[in-house]
Image (cartoon, rainbow, N blue to C red; front, top):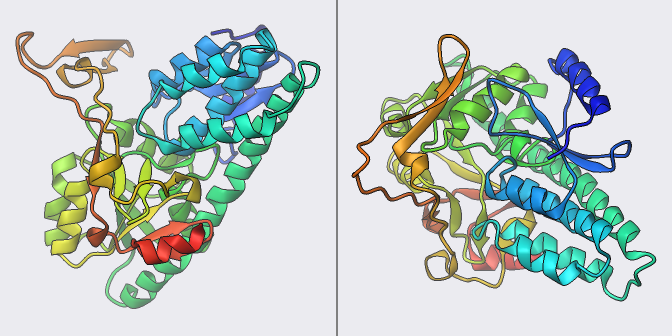
Length: 374
């Protein structure tokens, strides 16, 4: 992991201007020849930019969740192919295999690697490096456009809720789980893209943010980026959502997806299923925002076909945070002999999904509706 002096100077500029200014989650840095990412493991206490220079560094960034979120993982993997080929023009197959093992659940990883492989098919050694960079940069730009379109297509949902409730309340209350914002994509995000578009349209909003144990992506990432964009938000423990829905404090749930089946089953961060159950019981709309690339058309039922990632037990038994003195520390919160299970995702059946918000429009969570996207 390399951070050049010039990049360090640029980081100072980005820090000074970040409030009110857009900063992508990933970009190519011509001066250093590397791929720059926001190290999301350092947020919200530190905005740190890493400049990745090799395939190994890209794989580590994905596996350690320095980058995370299905769309961003896909684009990062595409850049990983470029960095591998830059080092060894004959390393394509090895790079594809290595990257495919970094995160098993998010289908965008598989989708991105297949797309790069097809784009590079037949390219000779003289052109393959340049072509690999070309397709990675193309996918970066496409992801921005796709996520912005998701927000545009979801905007009428929030506008309709506001029009129906504005005479009885001051804001639209949205509950989200994990981070499906700009940090989970190149820019805009998926679920939070809908929020950002509504904010720009003048719809008054308040977001309930699940902490999202065990890695606390809601607390560390979602609250951070919502605050940076001026969206009112409140951090809650993961188990508070049901109570808020019962007491009329939630108008809408919007989450992202790491993989969605042809039948509309949604695989997302662990805990999503429970929010969908509570929303269904309380007649609250439950929407999933995702790019079409996150739909795995080869799998009909999520229960039968989705691999559920199990992560390091230390994510549950330990917690990292900042002390009152500003020092980052990791502490154990469970006895060392305690058995730990750490499933990273769960599956929300299609019957609990009000609609799937994509860049192509809003679709029902059903094979008949999603087949129109094939």
